Length: 84
Image 1: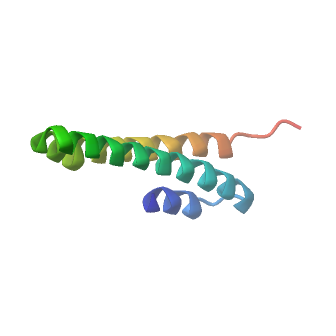
Image 2 (image 1 turned 90 degrees about the horizontal axis):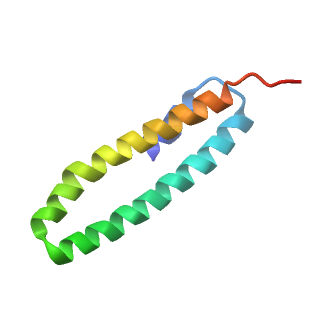
């Protein structure tokens, strides 16, 4: 979440566009994190090895891909020329 926020805040664009991107993206990442925690709890109840794999491999990759995708989507939307 911090890297996503840093990516948006460091991009040279109007602050208003940064705020909307931050609110939307961080909310989506927060919800994804809740899903991650619930899935890890369920995995731990059923299998310790599954928990380790999900925690150390799968969810890290998912978070990186989703955060990067959200940043790219925001970047495309924020830099799109406005029709007047």
